[in-house]
Image (cartoon, rainbow, N blue to C red; front, side):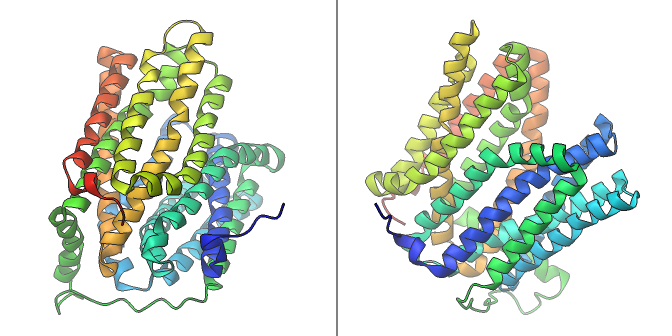
Length: 415
């Protein structure tokens, strides 16, 4: 039986974008694994040094988050994406070169991690702002669904492939795969034929001066706070980020210490989440078409929180614990459905010239709140226990849905 291409599979420029991002996402999963093992195995990094490496990766969002949105809105988005890809390829390639020359040092990893993180920030802000210029508004859910499938597949296969390459060819050389994936992504973007319109400036005449930059950064925040739908999406994302910080900090410790699972079983449980996320990406479009975008988003979040609560109800022998944890991870399909619709809705209702700043504002706020949640999770876990702390995190996550319920999102049927 011959499968027919439908929808955006008939869109040659979208398929070029999708193909490049598929390879890039897989490369990033390999590179993330390889960079960590370069520090651990090649340079014998201490726990403190690993902490600094993670800080270097995260720092650009806090320092440049809002500024990235301004520059993305001032420029055509496709060149920003290509420069970010090429820059990351060159930076990552310096690591295996330095390793071969015998001059690799932790300081280089810190610098490369920070600069790659900065370029990734610009890419991540520009990417969702670029998609609406490539596809029609009623194709956004389909487009984001297909791109989300790419991320899910990379999450399933990337870490394992990265681990195998680390073992076969050493960690620094495995990073070359990530560098090459960024080159392929840049090439796929360069082959896109659709012409992107020049950005239109909607700012004050003094925008080139520092005060103008501050004005433009604030404009993205004002637009979000002034629009009831964008405000609800931001409130939900910020509350969820707090929950993610709490649970993400304690999850592995909870699985090992509280539930007594081995690292192997823990990996299997997490892997189920990746497969479920892929299934959710397939289901997002038909579910949204059947129920409407607002009900689909709210329903997905409620189902996600209900099934996630199974992790704190897990008690007893492994034969009882494992099914509950697997069902909990299977709920990642609902997170995919929500995330795809949330991104599509934000893209559709935000003025095109403001998309970069709106995306950056959300990333900036959630980037600040996540470490607050991580610290809170650590404190709660230490004082009241892991299970109780995760329960509090889940309750906070449930409250996030109220942002959507008490907003116009609840009644939305179509974008």
